[in-house]
Structure formats: C-alpha cells, structure tokens
Length: 276
Ligand SMILES: C[S@@+](CC[C@H](N)C(=O)[O-])C[C@H]1O[C@@H](n2cnc3c(N)ncnc32)[C@H](O)[C@@H]1O
Image (cartoon, rainbow, N blue to C red):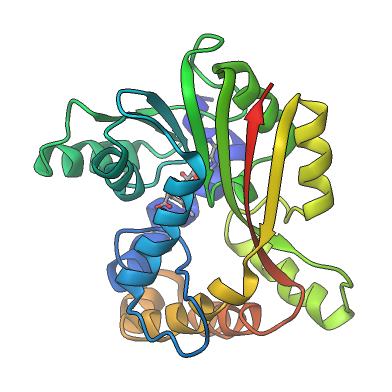
C-alpha cells in the first residue's frame, strides 16, 4: 500500500479528486467558506472567500521574508494571496497529488513559483525538521484529520518558538439534537471528515502542546451562508455531479448541504495561538 492509498487518505481523495472538483468548478478556486460582515452584506462568493483568507492572513501576522507552512493547501489560492499580501514564502502540503500539481501550475502562472511551493505531505507526520517555520495555518483542513491533537503537536514541532498558528475549521456546537446528529453524521460520512471538533477540544489540544495567547472566535454567523450558496452553485452543475455519483446521491448531497447550513449544531471557528 502506498501512502496515497492509506485508508486515512482515500476518503479525502474521494472528495477532493472526485466530486469536489465538480463543486470547485461551480464554487471557485478557494476551497473554503466565505465570510460576510452581516446579513446585509451582499458580497459575492469570490469576495467573501477572499475575505476569510484575509482574516487568516491578519491572524497569522507574518512578517516579510518569513517562511510559512500551509497545512492542507488545496490548490494554493489562499497561499498565493498570503504571499502577495505579506511578502512571505509559503510551503503548502496536501495528501492529494492532483492538488500538488494544480497548485504548482497555478502558482507558476501567477508568477509566484519561487515563493509558493507545494508538496505531498501528511499533516499527521509532517515532512519537515523541528523549528523550520516562522508561522503556520490550517485553513479548513483540520476536520479531515484523524487526530487534531497530533496535527497540533506536529505544528508545535515544526514552528520555531514564538511562531504563530492560525486555524479556520468547521466544528460542531452543543447541544446536539437527534435531528442535528443525522446531518452531522452525513457530513462526516460523505466529505472525508474524520470528526467535527469543538472549541473545548481545541483549547485543550493547544494548551497540551504548549501554545499560548490562544484566541478563539466562533464566526459561524459570518460564514454559515456558505452552505446554501454552495448548494445553489452545485445545482448549476448538477448533471455532472449526477453523472459521477448517481442522481439519488446527488440529491442527497445537495439536500444535506442545505441542512448543514441551517442546523444550530453546525459551527465554524477561527483561532490564533503562539508557540511558547
Ligand atoms: C477544505 S480543503 C481546504 C484547502 C485550502 N486550505 C483552501 O482553503 O483553499 C481541505 C484540504 O485539506 C487537505 N488535507 C486533508 N487531509 C490532510 C492531511 N492528512 N494532511 C495534509 N492535508 C490534508 C485536503 O487535501 C485539502 O487540500
């Protein structure tokens, strides 16, 4: 079995190298939620997804010339924006070799080949020496990790003392009702998600791994619009989705995407922390 084929990765690859590419064709190259200031904010998906990237960039507060690790880089759009905004060098890792190739090609086309590089790497066992990064972010990748504590421990290892960590993650919020459980379970089962984290779990994992100055913000109200808009976008490519997964499954995916955007158990956090 190669590393790519490990059970831990195959769920994720089924999504990102499979129907996720159809979602991406409708949603755009930022493979994450959007951020809207308030209910009256009518920003486009492109503007809102870039705004969430900008929140992560400000949380990271990286200085020009620093080396930043992007844990779960997708096709590298957030990394490109980070390079341009903060004048840093970014190394992105993902368990999808297709994403590595796409991200590398897109960075080259953007003239950033020497500043944004991408490689195969598992966040659970990062292929980097201790203390080799000034900052790191995990931008909506943690929900795929078999053990969030292990990834935070790895982040602590590869960051230098004083290095900043930023995380944006889909989480679950208490209390979990039976109806909410059905929706959360669907997401875990169909989106390569290992489990949904909680604010308390993050606080403990960060403290256990020596992170200080932890600031956690629940930004659910700002981002939750994403699910309905994503379902609308995917409806425009429903034929392609049904061709790949079947009509029944396409209908189920779309139904639960809207449900996930409406149950109170569905949450989202943004956090920053400093490696002591
Ligand atoms: C929702 S996408 C976010 C992509 C990107 N951060 C963005 O915002 O556009 C989740 C990413 O996490 C990556 N991922 C999932 N499990 C991983 C693991 N164990 N190690 C590294 N990356 C992983 C996926 O391949 C994918 O690139």
